[in-house]
Image 1 (cartoon, rainbow, N blue to C red):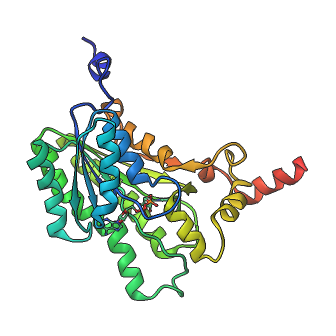
Image 2 (cartoon, helix red, strand yellow; image 1 turned 90 degrees about the horizontal axis):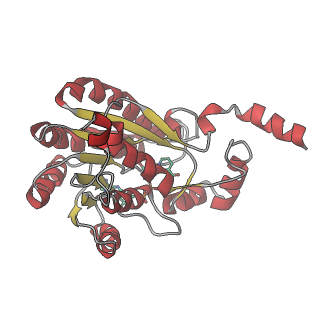
Image 3 (cartoon, rainbow, N blue to C red; image 1 turned 135 degrees about the vertical axis):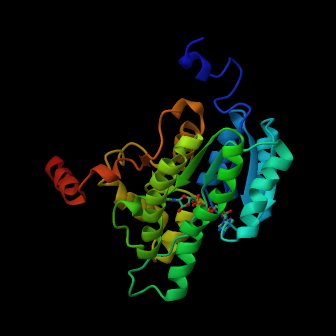
Length: 287
Ligand SMILES: NC(=O)c1ccc[n+]([C@@H]2O[C@H](COP(=O)([O-])OP(=O)(O)OC[C@H]3O[C@@H](n4cnc5c(N)ncnc54)[C@H](O)[C@@H]3O)[C@@H](O)[C@H]2O)c1
């Protein structure tokens, strides 16, 4: 059997069949659309993984669990705060107790606040760095040990376009940029132990949380996305959703990406390859 054949799932099996995955922030805030955590957890389960659904609001993760059950998948809910070391340890221990191993970790939790550093008080700065960046350090620290003992694994960090371009969220973007640097460090240091680490950079995505963020900026989601879409290469033909991030995460989680580590994949409609002023000038030329 060739290596390519070994990596291909057998007919009827999913792309991550037999693997065990933790997804943090596997619930979602109230509102329309699907969050990246719920979409990723549901997709991994559909493709054969057993899921540990982590959320500080267990009722939110329970909704995801119900969807997974209805599709015939297996999952448990673990209540926990990703900024708490004891909770982080319990996430990995729960995976080992319930399913006997750990292969995949998706660090999906993130919170954002708009503002320059002048508009960001020290407490808000600390909270944003903790939830978005320290959480990756803490949850990965325990997960890594289980993965290394089990022969390897895949960690997927959900960053943001704010890591690559100014979006007006100073502390959030700083944390998400740190997440990419940490991704590269972890990939280099734990590749020899069989653990791959990659990052996804979502751009403008329709999730329940973006509605709230738009309101914080004093506007409505459709206004923000409509204006943003004018300068996105794919903005005239599509809108990004939680599923776009989930499919990228499924690829990194699966053995299809066995030779890929330390990489950053943008799911951003092309935002990271355009210069807005040039894109707008192009629109003007088209009339
Ligand atoms: N929505 C977007 O447009 C967008 C764009 C770029 C990046 N992202 C990133 O995608 C990820 C998910 O965003 P979303 O809008 O789908 O998620 P979300 O805001 O709906 O949150 C998902 C879940 O995380 C849980 N959570 C929050 N803080 C937690 C904590 N400390 N411990 C445990 N659970 C916690 C919440 O209870 C919620 O159920 C985040 O990392 C976000 O930064 C989103």
